[in-house]
Image (cartoon, each protein chain N blue to C red):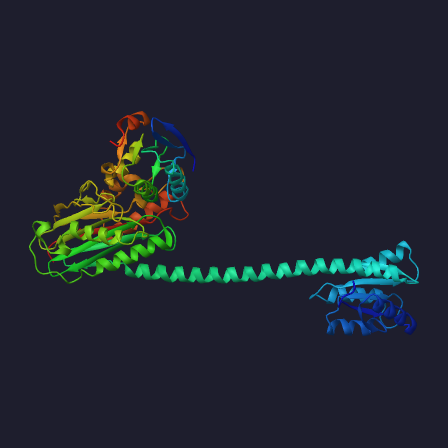
Length: 407
Length: 112
């Protein structure tokens, strides 16, 4: 039957009227609850999940109009379809009924076909309403799930970014070698990383890495490479400066970079990266470095110009069996060696102009007389000005080393 | 990623119409080039004359295109602007790819 298991609440103060409706509705297959007036009906509606109401207009205590108003104002959890039964039907009565919240009207005497038609229409609307409500609940639940997942990712990224910053060496010095850095990631997680570490008593090693791409995959690769390079600390016998090819592994930049390249080939999904790895002999300032696709390091002589060191090299993880070259130089006291990622020279101003190597060289020369930390602050400020507000498109990072006077 | 494909004398020319080959464009570039490589041409020429900027992701995508071609087939670069040429030199990719001034030279020079 069309009625199914839907329950109709019949509200009428006349015992005869209620019986008539009850009989008709049961004939149509509805389950029926009945109430003698609006007050009783309102109590039932608050206690039971009934969504179809057929109510008389004129009743003592609470009439049909007031019951309509209560339902519209007070039943927020569900939609209730209300059919108002009237003795007369003029425009004024219809308007009053609609304003009170009635959905449809029935005129007395109530015939079975009219009742069936009104309730069938009510059921269609209820069904539609329930579909919409179910969809809204589904959307709300999906949204809640998504925002919970997003919050988790946000939290994880922030804590990973904290771990990543924690890998960076605190600005300071190793023997005569002072160092400081600029590290401005484009998103929370950076594909750049850098490090400086003592290698035995006489040497310091340094590296600066820029993993291709951004975000989580780049950051994971940079974590992993940082970890590989950290193994060299302290594990170096005393060695004088000289031919890097004859030096222990960690003092031979080409060997270290080639080893990283071999390691990267074994994991084909990892991102490739560019880097500079180098070592400084602290007593003499003698320096050897390998430039693997990274922008050329800049040597800034005390009070002088900045000049590029080296001509390039294969990135790491791109070409199997690539061979790497070593560049050597000797830093004089007061000289600085500055490594940067291309995110810095390709930091675009609002008009699309890249910061560029010439500007960086001029800025480093200008900041030459400043102590290292003030020089880094000046670089940060200049780049923020250049960018003109907003975040960076690419990680903007720089590592500066300075050979100080004999300690 | 707008790429025009032209067949010419046994080679396939891929002309990039966009100004940037960067992290945002690289995935679409990879897909387009992989599809173009299905054609089995011995030589693919990447015409970069309109490209002003290639970043590390773009370079990675070009190299993986070369690796995908496998032995006996080659990828040549034509018309690279100075900034792009400089990136190829800095990363020694000028030793991996033949860099030609224009498409005609790339087709004539073959794999270089």
